[in-house]
Length: 319
Image 1 (cartoon, rainbow, N blue to C red):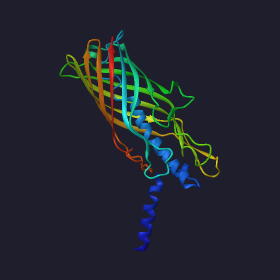
Image 2: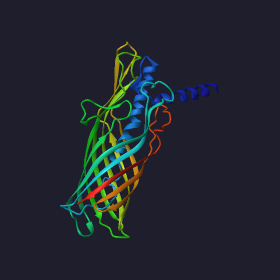
Image 3: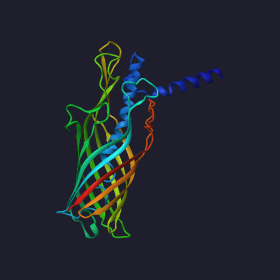
Image 4: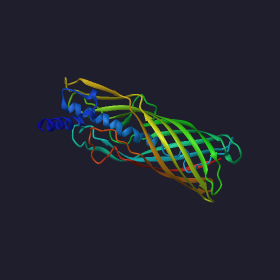
């Protein structure tokens, strides 16, 4: 019995270690903790960053295709999602406190250009989609990498894709469309290492972001009001994420950990639009599914495994 108890104790004691990043192992426990916090921060943050980049509906407020050549819609929108980022000066605490905890906004401009009118009823109508995102970095410790594409102190992301109208709709039959969008966000930097061990932040990381988004949307048009609802899947990945920290072997030695995370999340959303002469006020609220990635780090006031509410508001012009 004693052997069984000892074996179970060892197994339970070893379980949390399995979630640690092997590249973080150092002779200094504070350095190891800082590295593991940075790894988990990246894994928790980039699906949320991806969500405000993608939003739900690629053409906010409608499921209907534009109507073929000569038709164009432009939307100025702001997406937002609640997120938290760990304090890079306290990365060896448990739980790790947040240096930012609030709604991260992302303004963007989206366009849809009619390419094919399609068959009767809007069947197989095709639109070309495009977007330009400005990701603000007014968040403490978060900046645009000096080599990234940016405007002033904000990162510039570009997206492109296609939308196919399945049905043009007519009450009670909804308009239905499916779409695909590919978006990128250039490298962002979080935290700044000091010149020697124990100075500045305990870690820093840089990361880019690529997303592939698939959507199916159904909607109805009434006299002055549009409503739409949809589901989708996003696949996020980072092709170049570097985490750096002082490993404690010498005062100035810095260790680099390279990870290239990927993540797939499902989502659902509802849209509404109100016609005002030549423009429409459009809005969206949705839910990104949660995912258990076996985090080693405990974050204060933030559950990275939970589902997250996102939203957006905008003005759409049509021609």
